[in-house]
Image (cartoon, rainbow, N blue to C red; front, side, top):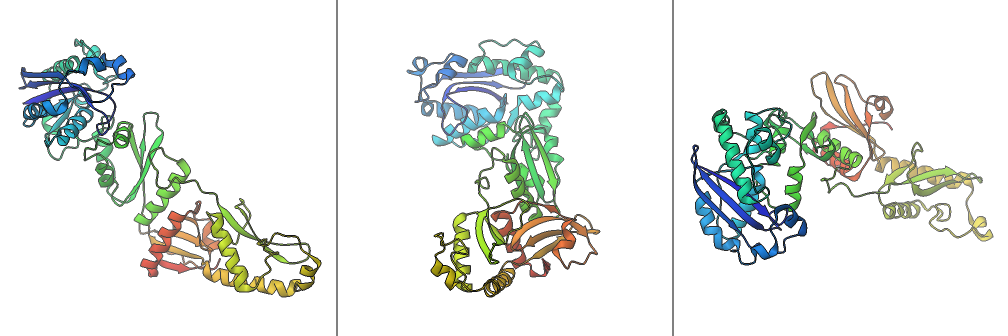
Length: 448
């Protein structure tokens, strides 16, 4: 038995919006055997754009039952049926959510007439309800009302059955089938063709724009997990509806996937990634020699193609580091721009000679070299002929790539031309340092 359902709502996701109308046709595979339909008072205002679309206004639902009143009847009608709707996850998410709020747990098999239509009549220009009915010459009346759209879905379902849909229905309803939980705009092959190894995956919208980037130890399993549970939350519902395509970049290891994901998020700024999209202003510690021969330290915004002693995301981190260096090596605060007042004659008279002062700078640089190491993390590659290499230079992430498995590493300079440079950031740096601490045998110290 099938329950063919359509609802009208006050908005696009179940956690915030209500149901204004519902229609259910119980179908035995040959004909409709039962019909339930009613307006519902959503106990919230119906937006004007919804009224313009459906014709349902606040006055029409003022005396209608609230959802709690129809919940027992609705649950009894649906609980033993196969739930069918056009874009089934939308209707099901609303009804399941509102039933749960009233104490009823709906957990039934689902069947989407959009996905079924693509199997029975592949290659049509559109599978929206209105256009699909016009293409198949099926009548549709009282559009955008629950009764009219549900009745059209009944006719559509019967037309599918008359054109060999049963074989597809049986496959789609199997427990191992992904058809009942996949987003409406994704084909089953989009999931089945994904690899089971580590990598980074990309969700694209209708315009092929990348809207989400994720990493995974098992790409297929992780991507599937995005869709295998119902969630009435607005953000999730909107997210699922906008996914039209999935692409991926395989990686040799989980660490490579972590680094690539972070770098890609910073580069592409996808709409639905939030955790790593905080804008950062990079700063750096520079050294230069002034006209008097003194080696001077200064903090400034990070410059491209100008080597720095160290870089950091927050200005306060840089000032804290510089003050610590000045104190530890007894450097002059004015020569390091901590004290920005002009030099007095007394200040100049108390200065050491440039040669003596620069010896302190040399000691500071040697200590900084030890504190900011240069090393590579080396791990397995995609095959036996190569190995993965991630380079940390002077404490910051420089880049990664694949090297010949037989190559011996001694200096950073010799491997840079074989690696792809990336922007350093806290997420990447912390991940590599954590990995190197956990697997010290995979860390190779290098000359900078």
